[in-house]
Length: 257
Image 1 (tube, one colour):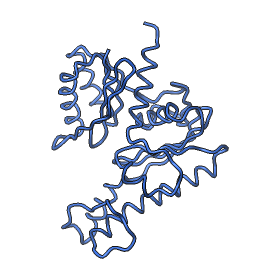
Image 2 (cartoon, rainbow, N blue to C red):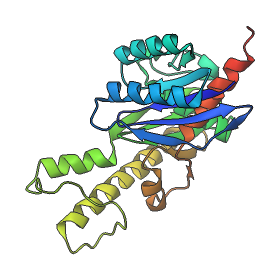
Image 3 (tube, rainbow, N blue to C red):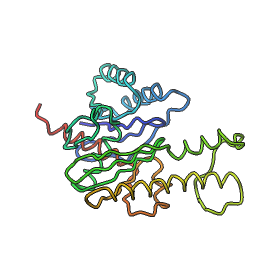
Image 4 (cartoon, rainbow, N blue to C red):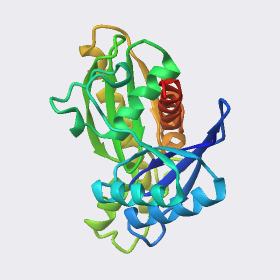
């Protein structure tokens, strides 16, 4: 059986195929000019046809209407579907939210990825995408909670939109430095270093309040930009959510029919 592992985010659809215990490298498809919901459904229809998949394990942040559209598409193409959701005690994770359903499913999959990659030990998971989420989990699987902050591009967009730099379309994040001789590079470097500093500070504060040493896992689309600048010991795994989705697929396969 070929299973498609899908992470439908705010900007892109990330995917990998999983068959006979082997997972393909993660690939990404942008939504283009479409809304995220319409773009994701369009990309999924094409992908499902090309890959001839029998099952989809998917996590998304696109709302209930997207789930309904996806269910209809899978029914039309006779593809089995698992939409990963945060649930109390699911897969050994004890979500701290009073209502676990309000905890983002993508953040939940990040916790599963940490368990699969790091084993049963305390961890801090940074998922750096359109938004950045930072969550902590104890060795016993208890989720301690976390924070959400703007991602790198959101920081840049806000700075451009609210200043006299509105004529600039984008800021560069490569080759950041603290001494810049032009406004554009100064803005890009400032946004990147501000996010790096926030990550370092938040992770340090989390670790100070945790009862055991925690491993830091960095994942998401901006991993390669942030990882070289972070002054804290961490493991960089851009496609870690695929590890979490694979874990779900493996667990589903073990369930009795």
